[in-house]
Amino acid sequence: MASAQQFSLGEAYVKGFGGATWPSGFDTTLTEDGTDIALPSFDHDTGYTLGVAVGAAVSPNVSMEIEYAYRKADFTVTDRDEGDQANGDTSANAFMFNALYMFDGMGATGAAQPYIGAGIGAANVEMSAGGQNFDTETLFAYQLIGGVDYKLNSNTSLYAEGRWFQTESGKFDGPATESFDGEFETFDVIVGIRYVFGRAK
Image (cartoon, rainbow, N blue to C red; front, side):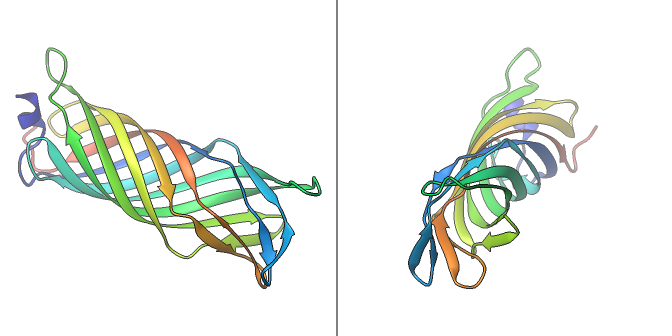
């Protein structure tokens, strides 16, 4: 079967990826010493994501991997009360543990393999606007993954996938005692390359 050729127990691999990210906008309340002082609404532009992962097969169709991903996107923040606006950006560093299920290969050669997966991990998120920085403690994060892997040769493949990524709601701490609550949610479209070690070329 094509999947048995694609994976065997103990195969290790490394991969790198990049692409576009679309963070969701959200409304929140900015407080200072527990008193409401503004009603910011964040509207994000399209951003980018970059990352690397290392993993290994645990069965002919299942692999596990550890991943680091960086996401960044600009935004416009609007005070829903006063109407004032400012520009800024959001960045996030995420470390994830992913599980992937590879379906059997498609086509005459079985080179194309669709897959699905999910991951859990931790992320730190920072937002900067108007010369002020707000960041979170480490937040629990999770993601859903779907894509297609295309084998170029016995060791190397290209892949494209879509992802939905989200953190739990957390507190963004800023200057002095200012803070607001929010979560970071994105949809990503990425492309990448994967190299499997130890296969005969």
